Every structure is written in structure tokens, then in C-alpha cells.
Length: 211
Image 1 (cartoon, helix red, strand yellow):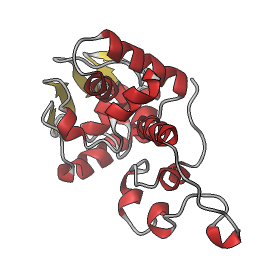
Image 2 (cartoon, one colour):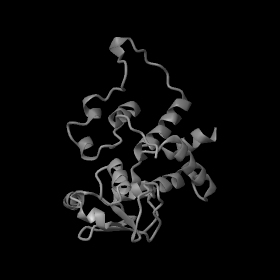
Image 3 (cartoon, one colour):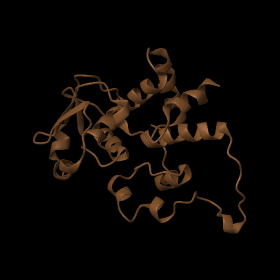
Image 4 (cartoon, one colour):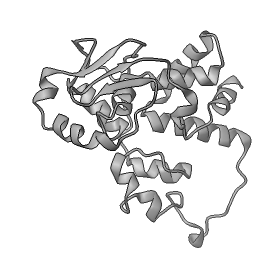
């Protein structure tokens, strides 16, 4: 399965904002964006000129931010956009809900992982059950009423103990329910777009693809 394998800290610097792609590391002094907030590449003192950024470039940046946030490549992201158009409602909000409904994102939102990249790895390694069945597809869509639990393999790992200790201070969104004692979660409603705290503007992404 194709995925971005480059340095994720460069993405935050490139798009000019912290995307929290490395979990706890992004909160501390080791965060690359805190140490070097300037974009990667040649700096101004070496002769780089400031250029006017077009509206199209700004729209592209918003789309790239969304892709980087959820760890999705262009082909798959475009499929989410086409699905959002097909459904009723505001296209931008629908797009965010589709992205938030990914299994790896739900695992992250439940506090079972410190970052979406880690959540993706947990799912791929067979540590997660969806409705009692082992599911190792990070892009699998979790729907209302679905239950997310740790598989037998996951329960035997040291990771579940670490996550159980650290998830107490994590904020779980209202559209999810979690039992920290049994490490079981459930999707109880549609993702609340206002609560997502997206680092991108979905309306601008819709404009980008509409041209």
C-alpha cells in the first residue's frame, strides 16, 4: 500500500503550521517546527526572493495540508472528494466526515495511538478488531454503532498497556465513546466537523477541485 515515507516534520514547515503528525513529540521542545518554523530549502539569506502566492497555490496548500494530516496520497484523497460530491449535504463537511471516519483516524481519536501514523501501523499489524473481526485496513470506514476493540494479538502486546496509561489525559471527541478499563470504543454519532479542529479549510479544497 502506497504511503508518504519522507520526513513528516518537513511537511509542517512546508505548510507553515503544526499538523501534529508525530504525537507527543510535537508538544515538546524537540518539535522541528518550533526550532525552525521557516520553510525547508534555501533561506532568504542565501538569495531566495519572496514571491507572490497565487490563489490557486493557496488552494493547493490547503489540499496538501489535509492529505498530510490524514496520511493520504492524491489518488485516494480524490476518491474521498468524489464520494463527498455524490452524497447530499455540504461537500466540504462531508469530506471531513469521510476522512474522520477512517479506521486509523478513529483509533487515533479514541486515544489508542499517539498519532495517526502510529494508529495506521497498529491497524496494519493486526492489533484492532472492528465489530469483533480482525481488520487490518486503515482506510476501512467506521460507521455509527461500530465497535472498535483490541484483537487478541493486540491485548498481548506491551503497546496496549502503554496506551491505557497515557490515554487518561487525552480528549475524546463527543461522537466517540470509550471504556478505558476494557480499551473498547464505539462510534456513537457522525463526526462533529466543528470539533475536529482541522488544520485546513475544506471549502477551499472544494474550490480547488471544482476548477
